[in-house]
Image (cartoon, rainbow, N blue to C red; front, side, top):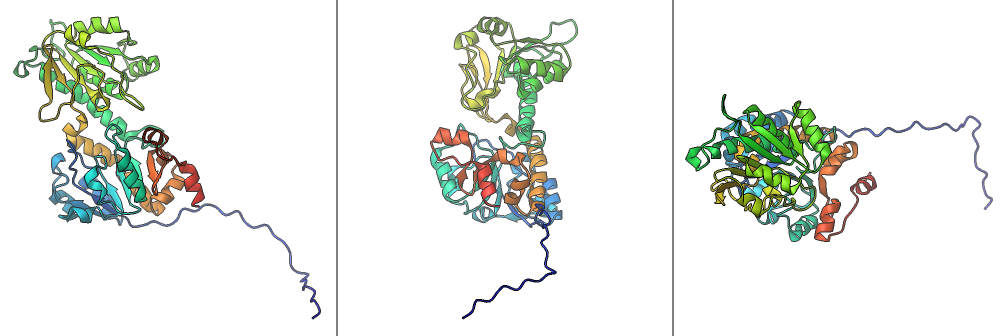
Length: 404
């Protein structure tokens, strides 16, 4: 059979194709579930009724477990009026494709989790276990953590809000325990005209330290701040807008200041492991009887050697005549304010995810959100956690790129 020559049409011409732009996909309706927290001392809730109302009016569905908001004084009636569906069966709540939790995932939750679920919750590395993480990986879960969630400015909005609450609250708590009714020194925090001001020592010049200093100064106390990071000390002075007594953490100088203070606040942070112990038992034993220690760092081990975890029910203990307040998760004691702060960050994020057609699409466009992801479809994408628990690490950017 003779081979046919190809037909050549003279009018045919080659043209360059237009460049295709990456267009965002259309919006998606989302089903969001909010379970009641059963974790130790967790009173907060991830979405307030006002936030639920905004989500529902944008076409999303919210189911919430019966009495989930009670601890932060948001009632079922408020959520019902906002358009949420109240559910009495815990298992049904966990069937929602997107799960919002104000406490970390715990053992009791694991069996209820669904395959390919999206979970937005804190991590609390100090109580996280490798087998818990392994089970979440097996269920191909995508998990976003409060602690690592960044906004457009590159800061951590939820951590910042919780730190502001903890810092401000630490002074209110100290003022309470300095009173005679609580076996304190019977001193008014701040003082009045003609009487020397109360002396407050703050160890740590981060956001907790800054807000503790603001509250103490507003009450009229004399404030001294210690931190080994000189940049943080400078930033604290600039933010507060007045000269403060600041120092690097020099043990002898710190011991001398602790001897004469009424209130000592431990506000040191730690990016990875335990908070450094900077106040020894000997330093505490030389403090004045009736003085108050508020160890906000207790979430990560505490920075006072004498600190031991206490609860909201039994918040203090005495050692060497010094009142120790070592309650972890201080914002949970101010649950309504803390819930509103969390909700203010998560509600716009959920709206954005809905407009983008889900979290996977949003991740492609929103680079800042990637820092909050520690599990993506079951792959561990947080390098520190992979090192700590000896689990396989996968680069999130490569995972996202491979799915486009």
